[in-house]
Image 1 (cartoon, rainbow, N blue to C red):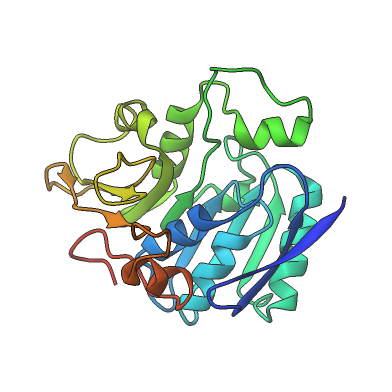
Image 2 (image 1 turned 90 degrees about the vertical axis):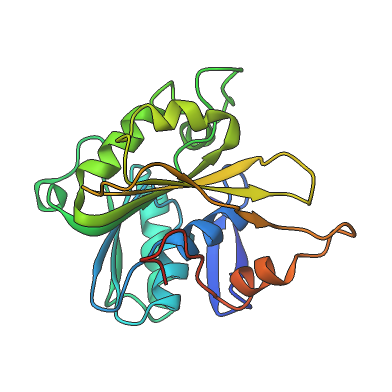
Length: 244
């Protein structure tokens, strides 16, 4: 596997990831920033890839412990190596497993669960590369990702996911009617959102909330100050009143 070395959070995280296939970027950083974890809590990532989102979360929140599940064993080896090289191997680790058939030790509640599920459903032709196809095409299982994440979330904890905006209805249908926050990511002012972050509080009674969201770019293409604070400075992205 040929890899590249990429830097995140203002070069505070260095990640080696496949040169070809699915590659983590802005979405992983935004997802990690939205997880409202506190020091000492335990977090589970489903579909961790090379570990970018988990490592970004662990860099932002001191003493948080993260377990990552990834079905591709080569990516698991890469993710664990990334955790070690970023000096976080003691509290961030990854195992090779199916997110829908977790090993016994992971079939328990976590304080927070998060995922960046495959962005495409059954539409379109799958890429010829098997690993890339698995990372990009969910085979119509987006609802299963939502259910799997919420199932592993402790009462009062959060389940957070980032997905294509046009799949919002599909995802909401798999989540409870209450305790869910929708947070759009707008490319520029006046443009339709391409990504949304969903966050569900396990057992919450608050009605569905749609937040103003975040504008990513200025008209000239530069990141907005708010987006830059997250992407380069490691700021958090609070989705609800309990967020950081």
